[in-house]
Each structure stands twice: as structure tokens, then as C-alpha cells.
Image (cartoon, rainbow over all chains, first blue to last red; front, top):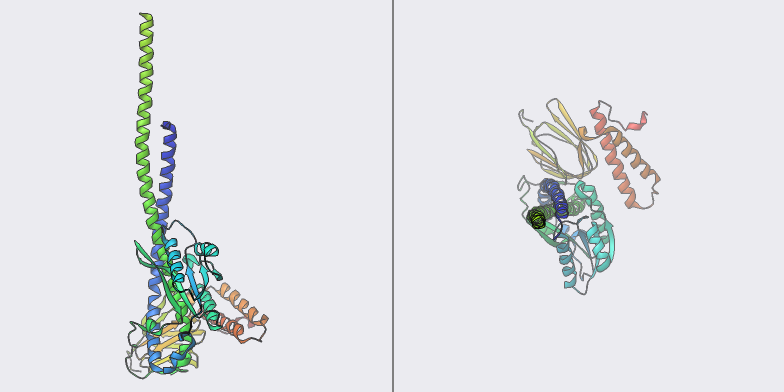
Length: 296
Length: 151
């Protein structure tokens, strides 16, 4: 058995770790709330944009011919925008996203996959085990702006336009709730008009004839790219919320473990201390006995 | 317009809702086909925006926003501006707006005018920064003119 002093040292260090993980839990909780608010805040724009899109689509049959909406046959080169955290301590989150992405790529063997990584964890893994990485972005983190998302969406959109990619998917962790974050791989390009306008209400003014300036096609031309931005932005804010909630849960478990471990060690310490005292008493008693016998 | 008629206005971006007010008298919008003044009971219009200044009037008060392109959905009772970027004049810092404007101008000047793509981006950036500067100057009681002429 380790000496009582050694055990005391370990108790101290376990308690320190517990304090650190507790702090990290609190930080993650507040960051998660912020990320959730961001996702929430972009919903209004999303709803309105969908409404406008549904309206435009019903106005012009030509809208289906827009390049961003046009599916290609056959699909030969597929890009995956892989959004992962920069840092670990998130339980199984990163490996779930990576596993999902790898499985997705294994499904279709006739397709060449290319990656656009956002965040360190995915980049490090894919460099070693994945297909070619054609683009790499830093995870914008908690201060993500629409501009960050636009940089990514412009890169993939131009690759889509020039034929380097026939389709683009987003792989990230969808935030379900505090305990559940689902790794998803979802199509980004070509844009699915049906998916996008799904659940869109009619334009606020109902059926009254709308004047569209300059024309439905031109408005669609500038609307569609912003829908790509919007989806990338929402994927980033969602994966931030997922990252922070996963970390929060992991840190809470770590804090609980630290507490338990400290209690176990405390017991061991008490036993060791008791044993030491008993030994000392035995020594003294033995010594006294020996002296008494020598005197007698 | 009938007195007592008011217009509701939302300015939203992908990131957030920038402004919400349901008692507006007039809103001026930088439409792609030209400046557009919207009063209550305007006919429904859907139009793209160019980077510029949105001005709203409510009684004697005026508010200014710099928007960087987007769309507007005009209805008789409600106007929704979906902007790529939108900032209220109070949110813009003059020095930084000025610096950003100069940077955009430099990029624009240095860029060879051969390819259409990048120049368009540069031009849009310049227009956006110009709008921000206009808005922030308006707040300080300036003329709202392009700044560096009177250096």
C-alpha cells in the first residue's frame, strides 16, 4: 500500500482535475447556449428566404434550369464539406462524424470523393486515412460570421460550377438536444428545391400579383447563392452547439468521476493512516513490553 | 396615405434580426433598379437590393442602416429586408469603417480590370463600405457624401 502522504498527494491532484473539468463544463454550457441562440437567430432569415424561393419557383418554370438546382448525371466527383471541432474532450462526437463520413464514402464505389475540411480533427484524420483534401478552412469557432460561411460556400460553389465537383455534401454533427448529437451527411449542391421550400408558407400577401424586379430569374440568381451560405452557416452553428454540448456532458462525467475517485482515495488514505497508527502503537507496546521484561 | 397608417419593417440577416418596428412611416430602399421609397399600402414587390443605405422614417426620427445587398419583400402593411449584411448606424465605428473603405478602394485600384469576376467582388465590397461610411457620417450630422474628398 502506498504511503499515506502519497495518497494525500493523489487526492489533491484528483480534486484539482475535478475543479478544472467543472470549470470547463460551465464554460461549455454557456458557449452552447450562445451557439444555440445563433442557430435560432438565423431561422427567421431561413424561413423568409424559403418563402421567397417557393414563390419564385412557382412563378417561373425557368427557375428549374438554374445551374445550382441542376442535378448531373452521372455523378462522378463528389465533394464533402467536413465540419469537425478543433479540439477534443468531446466524447465520441468526432469519431461519430468521421465514421459516418467514411461509411457514406464507402457506399458508392464508382464515385471519386474529395474533401473540404473545416476544423482540425477532421483534417488530421482525413490526411492520413481519407481521400484527397481539396480545400481546408479553419473552424471559425464561436465568433463565426456569415462571411466565414460565405468563404466556404463560394469555394464549393465555384468548384461545382467549373465541373470539378458534380455534387457537394455537408458532414457535421446535428444538434438534437443536450444528450444527443447526430452525425449527418446532407446534400448541399445541387440545391434541392423541394427540400428548401418544404414547409414554406405562402408569401405574406397571399395570391396578389407580385411585381418582381428586375425579374424572377435575376432575383433567383442572387437568392440561390445566399441559400448555400445560409446552409453552411447553419451547419457550422449547429456543429458548434453539438461540440459544446458534447464537451459539457463529457466534462460533467469527468467531474463526477473525479469526485468518486477522490472519495475512494480518501477511504484508502484513512485505512493507510489507521494502519500506520496501529503499527506505531504495536511498536510502542512491543517496546514497553520488552523493557518491562528486561527490568523484571 | 391615410393618416394613422403605419408600416411594419423587419431587417434580417443570416446571423440575426437587425431591426424590427411596426410603426414606420416611410422606408427608403436601395433597389437594384434604383432607389425605392415605400409608404404604407405599397403594391407588393419583390426586388433584389444593391449595397447601399436603408433609411427609415418614424415621425420625426430617422434611422440609417448600411446593407450589403440582398432582397426586399414589400407588402402593403409589411416590408421584410433580407440583407446579406446589415448594420445600424450606431453599430458602425467611424475609424474602422474609414479604414475598411480605403482598403476596399486600394484592392479595387490594384486589381487589373481584365477578369470580370474578382472586379465585381471588389466593386461590391467597395459599394458596401461606401454605404457603411455614408451611414455613419449621417449619424454624426455630416453630409453623407463620399468621405475623402474633404480630407
